[in-house]
Length: 233
Image 1 (cartoon, rainbow, N blue to C red):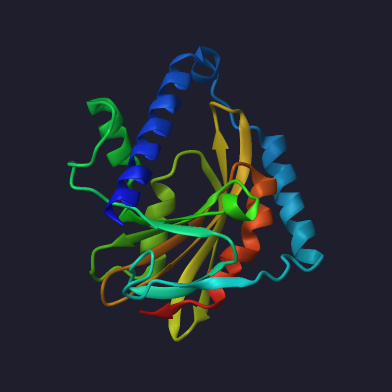
Image 2 (tube, one colour):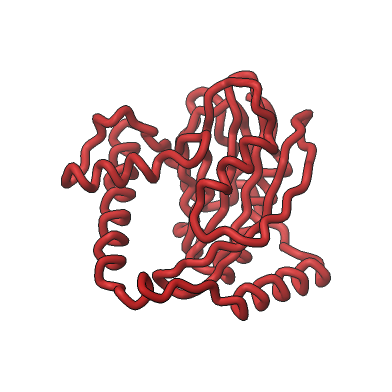
């Protein structure tokens, strides 16, 4: 899995470097930052409509990851949706391969968010969607799931309207959050979701983003499957 992890790391570095270039060419977005309140309101209204109409639909399991020998070895196990592809991510010690020192620094920054580090990426493209379930892991400590999740969300730029709740699955008690993220560069707002649980090996965060809100909602069944089947490893 080392080769695959390096490939993911290089992809993150290249994507991050492209984002820096685009930001440098986007003087208007930097000079006039704003939060599109109308888009935020529309996203919130749409989420409410979806909840009222019954939410997501069922999705078939494509197998379980997290156990020793699986694509990603984690402190927890859970089912991934059919056709989604899991690949381990090298959280890194600064020795990963990248096309430049700047790209390496950016990739390292992307691999860490708040108190956790990226450890697994589950790609939805083989199933026809654009987005990922990303799994992040922290060091063992005294922080509970809610505190870890709050730290994770706080570290993301452009967050608003975060709504936290508690959940239980497989003997684990965790925290969950649904929130909006506004991109000044793209001048748009989209929905994201994440959950966290505390284990003896450290906290685990499962995050679902997506290219936009439509893609996020299309992938929610896979996120709900992971949440529903979550177990301690």
